[in-house]
Each structure stands twice: as structure tokens, then as C-alpha cells.
Length: 87
Image (cartoon, rainbow, N blue to C red; front, side, top):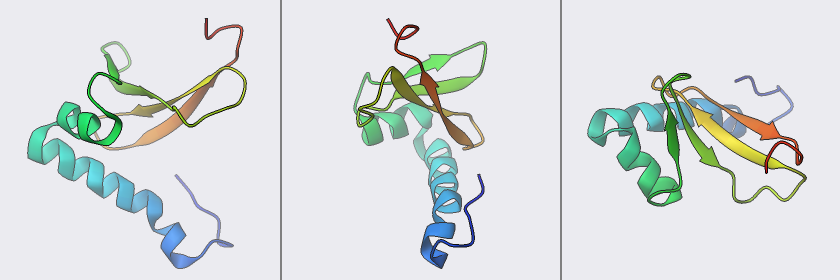
């Protein structure tokens, strides 16, 4: 994930900090334990085929739904499903 140079130095370090925390969590107790602590028990699911943990973004208020997608290396991205596909 790349953050533009117009952001403050602390904001530019934010993606790397999240990635470090994810890696530490996997090492210390596994991703499920970390996701339970961060998002709440039972709010996430694991996609075997894609090898991703999927967590709904409960703060998203736009059309459709948004999800956090996290892999075992700690890399993550957000995905959005249009409203007609999110049913």
C-alpha cells in the first residue's frame, strides 16, 4: 500500500505499522485470535480458496458493502460489493 507524500510522516508510516501488528498477532496467537480482539468474535470468515480472512466494514455507510481482506502475510485491502450484489 502506498501513501502519498502530501501526508504527514506519521500517516505515511501507518500502513507499515498495521502490517507489523498483523504479523505479530499471527505469531503470538494466530489471526483468528487477533481478528476476534480487533473486530469482535464471529464477525470475520476465512475464504479457503482465496486464502483471505474477510471482515465486513461496519463503519461503511455507502451503497453496497465493504470488506477488509487480509492475507497471512499481513497484507490487506478493502473490497466493495455494489448494492445489487450484496444481497
